[in-house]
Structures are given as C-alpha cells and as structure tokens.
Image 1: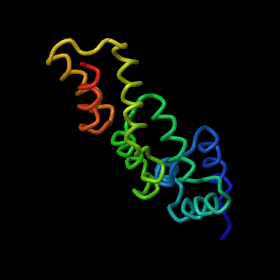
Image 2 (image 1 turned 60 degrees about the horizontal axis):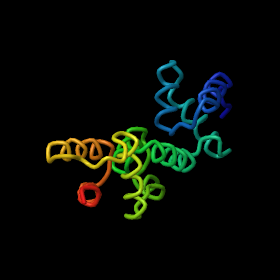
Image 3 (image 1 turned 90 degrees about the vertical axis):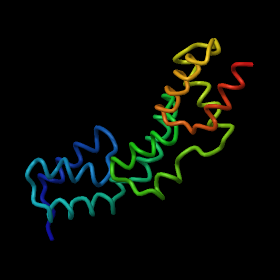
Length: 149
C-alpha cells in the first residue's frame, strides 16, 4: 500500500511541534478528513521508523510535569487521556517515596514558600492543593505533619 504523502506531511508537521501518542495523532488527522485506513498505514510507518514513539512521549511528559510540581496520580491521568497504555505509563512514573516527598516539598514551597501551615484550616487547604496536584494522600499528610513540627 502506498502511503498518502499529504497525511505523512501533516503527521510529521504535528510531530515536529511535539511528541504525540498514536491516539492523539490519529484524532487530529481524522479531524482533517483523511481516510481511516490511510491514517493507520501512515501511523504504522511512523512507529516503524521511530518517529512516533509513545515510550519517548511518556518519559518526556513525566519528566516535564514532575519538574512543574505534579504528582504521579495527575500525570497518570493525563497520559491515559492521551491514550497511553498503563504499563507504558507506570514504567516512567516516580514511585520512590523519598523522591515523591521531595517533589511534594518543591510543589508546596513554590506555592506557599517555606512557612508551615498556621492552623488546621490552612493545613487542609494546602493538603487539597497537593492532592489536586496528584500526590498520594499518605505522603501529603506525612509532609504536612513534618512541616508543622
């Protein structure tokens, strides 16, 4: 089967801007009105040539979002929305508890500075912020307990 050069050009253009998952790229090409079978053929070719690489996407995305102060639950959810498989996602997520505590501290200090929460209401508010960011509840409690001392 001959690959449609228009689809190839469109797909490469999208990939030049940033990495995409197969699902994301498929959806974007589908919206442009290309035939489903032709899209699949181009995507298969891009995967075979390592231009479309979901492992690379997961690794880069996890690194970027972690540096911005997001936790594993939030990142996991975002990558699932992009259509990545759970095993691919889990290989790249941070699971070391000490490292996660450091990430919680970084996210907390970016938002609130080094001052510990003053009262239970403020502690709860900060806990909700960290939970929204995707950090595990037990580690949030541990961090907030230690910062209150």
